[in-house]
Amino acid sequence: MAEKLAIDGGRPVRAALLPYGRQSVGEDDIEAVVAVLRSDWLTTGPLVDVFERAVASAAGAAHAVALSSGTAALHAAVSAAGIGPGHEVIVPPLTFVASSNAALYCGAVPVFADVRSDTLTLDLVAAEAQITPRTRALLPVDFAGQPCDADAIGALARARGLTVIRDAAHSLGAEHGGRRVGAFADLSVFSFHPAKVVTAGEGGAVATDCEDLAERLRSFRNHGFGTDFRARQAHGDVYSPMTALGYNYRLTDIQCALALSQLSKLDEFLKRRAQVALRYMAALADVPAVRVPTVDPAVKHGWHIFPVLLDLERLSAGRRTIFAALRAENIGVAVHYVPAYWHPYYESLGYRRGLCPRAEAAYERLLTLPLFPAMADRDVDDVLAALAKVLRHFAR
Image (cartoon, rainbow, N blue to C red; front, side):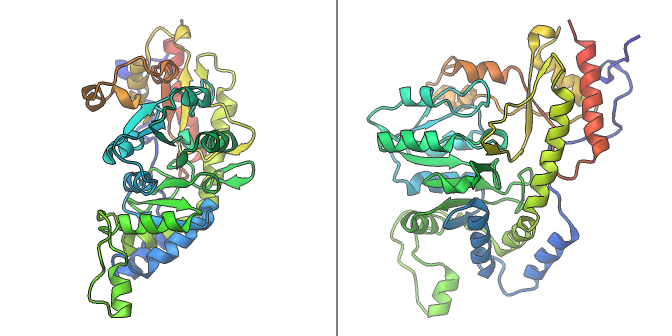
C-alpha cells in the first residue's frame, strides 16, 4: 500500500520545516558585527570602502558601490545609465519584480522578452525583436545563479548601442568562460539578502569598470551629494553640494562587517551549494516527472536556488497541489517566479498575459527545492524522499 501523504493526514517525512534557503551565520560573523558596534562608526564608515573593494574583487570588476539593498542597487544602476522617461529597458519576466521595477522607478518602460526554454535566462532572439528607437538597455537576469551568455549579450548591445545592466543578484562568485560575472556588463547588480550566497542582512552593490558610472552611483546613494559625512569631516568641509537628485541608499558599517566576514567564506559556500545541487542532479536525472536545470558547460553556476520543472503530463495533479503536498511533508519548496507582468500592478499599467509564452509555461511547472550551505546530506535525502513520495502518489 502506498504511503499516506502528510497532506492527507499521514506522517510527514520531516518533523520540522526545512526552508528553501537561509543564511549561514557563524560566531566569526557575529564577532565582526560586535566589533563595529564597539567602534566609532556605525554607518558609512571605513568598512564600506573595504567591503566595496572585496565585492569588486569577487565580481571581477574595477569598482563596486555598496547600497542598502539589491533593489536599491538596481534602481541606482538604471539611473546611472541615464535611463529616464520615454526610454525602454528589455528584461525577462522570470525574475523578482525588482528587476523590472527599476525601470519604472526611473520613469522608463520595462519591455518583457521571453526566456530560453532550457536555461530560463533571457532569449536574445526574443530580446532583439523587442528593440525599438526608445530602447536604452538590456537587463538580463542570471536566473538561479546561472550566468547569462555574456558574449552574445555584449555583442547585441554593442551592435545596437545599448547599455547592459546585469541582474547578478543570484550569481555572486559564478563565472562565464572562466571570468567572474561582474567582468562583462556595463553595470552588474548584486544582492546580500539572507537567502543569497553571502548576506549583509540586507544590502546590495553595483560593480562596474567605469569610474564615471561609479561616481554617479556613489552620489545617487547619498542624496545626490558629492561626498559623504566621513569625507567632509576628514577635510573640514562645511557642507557637500547636492548636484543631482539622490536617495538615502547607504549601507552601514554594521552590515558591511557581516558581509565582509561572509565574503571570506564565499568559495566555501559556493562549494557546498554545488555539492547539494550535484546530489539533486544525480538523484533526479532519471525521474520522469521532473526536469532538472540545464547548465551551460561554459559557466560555473552560482546555485542560488535549485529550480526543477514538473512534467505535468505524467502527473494527476498540478503544480499547486504538488507544492502543497511537499510543504505538508515539511519540505519548504518555493516558486521562482510568477512572471512579473502577471502582478496586479503591472496589469493596471496595461500589461497582459500571453506576452512571453515560454516563461508562462515554465511558471506553471516550476518548483524550487531547498538549497543552502548549512544543509546536511540527510536534509537532501529528506527532500528527495518527500519528492519521491509525492510524485509516486500523483503519478499517472
